Amino acid sequence: MVQMYSIAGQKIGSHYLAMGVLSALFGGTYFAVSGPSPAKKAAQTPPINASSPDEEDFIKCDSEPNSSSASAVANIFALRKFLDSADKGEKTKQ
Image (cartoon, rainbow, N blue to C red; front, top):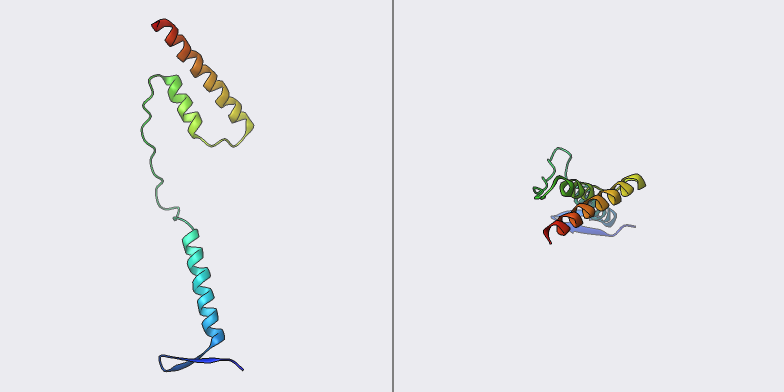
């Protein structure tokens, strides 16, 4: 037999209470984890304050997620190009 609880003057079986608690738990978890709807706009990135176009390209490449090894190689070349231009700038200042 089922254990019956008296709630607001009604007799409710324990299995209904358990189903209610579990559905509230899993439903609340689903809505909490589901994230924002696609209709919301993504946050804008802050402006890039670069002193040269090479530095700006490097910052843009560095902020993008790497989805393949080809983009990782491109980031390495962009870094080398930026560092070479920075070295030339320091040599001319001295």
